[in-house]
Picture 1 (tube, rainbow, N blue to C red):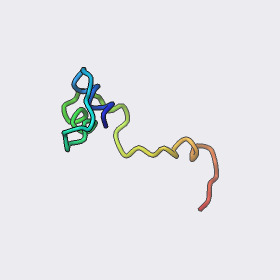
Picture 2: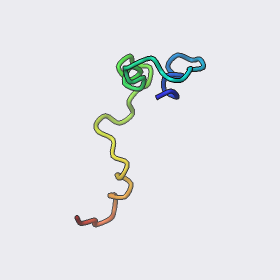
Picture 3: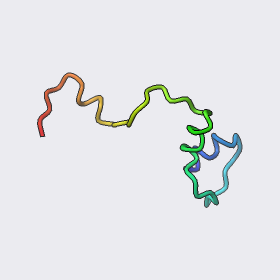
Length: 55
């Protein structure tokens, strides 16, 4: 969270953070970080392409 807060404010961020809001969500809502692919992100997506994975 501190990394995103630092990127959002363009300055060094002191720890512990005093904000309760997610800096990433604030940046997305403000349009400062454009969404390239809308929808939920799944880190396993690369594993599911082209593989016949079964539960």
